[in-house]
Length: 120
Image (cartoon, rainbow, N blue to C red):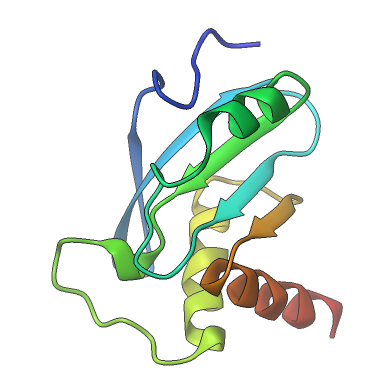
């Protein structure tokens, strides 16, 4: 387990779909990582650190800024399917083949779109 926490972990960056995603990853490296999709106008700092760090005791936790939260001028998709495509590109850019996915509000709709795409 890393010594990083939700508040004291390095912010990293990965590019996918023409977007530079900011993210943090910590916790156990083995096992299925848990990826969080935030709410409308949220960012990776809007999750409760106590919840994240509790989960990170047992598994890898990944939080990231979805495209809509970027400062850089990018075209924001107008559909959940478009947002899901970008979130999937982020996961692919990290080289993850399998994840658990959690979303809140808008992030929950994006997570549902991702899972419906995978299941169909």
